[in-house]
Length: 167
Image (tube, rainbow, N blue to C red):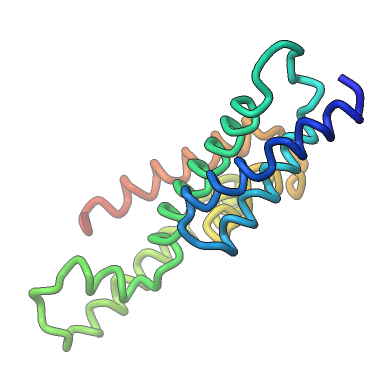
């Protein structure tokens, strides 16, 4: 497909992409962000587009996957990024709010368990916890992405084992 044909497909479907992005996000700014990310990925993967297939559906599938991945990321990281004190309080709403000493001990215990992990696992896990993506961690640590994912998974498993008493 030539650049001219590709640009023609983009201009023909941009209104549809915009309306679907707005439907997904229910917010104009978020829809514009989703649309921009979709257009970038469509452009990057234009070589994988097969002639004779439906361009609109191909692009919308890319948009849908981006939206789902971002939703999952926000859902997981939204809980991870909350302070431990807030997490503990929302899980124990029926308990009085005067047990901040217990919460501090709990937060300190979690921090010490994370610090107690081997650096091999704690560094990638800490970077992931701070919001870095797998590709960024892999590039920073000069490791294959599969190794990074494996180490983060192992770190989670070890943390679950060591923090089982708090579950």
